[in-house]
Length: 117
Image (cartoon, rainbow, N blue to C red):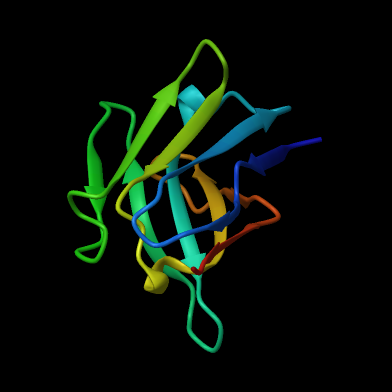
């Protein structure tokens, strides 16, 4: 059974940091393009960051310079390091895995990040 298991979310104050993890179960993440999406209350799900196989990375303008996506293939895990967090970073963060050049993909169950003082 393919699973993407997210962890590391929670409550954080503005200016703080969090590191989200996405561990693959039944799936080898090094063969997938990986991404983090988020969905804020009342808003559509949006792409936050992605990392390809090269590993090429891309970021939403709103998180450039603050967030870093990375892989650890030995741990079969993808990370999202979130620094200088702001209230607009609040939302449910989803891990996403896509087979390159296909429509085959999987989503994690989502993890809550709340930014509040």
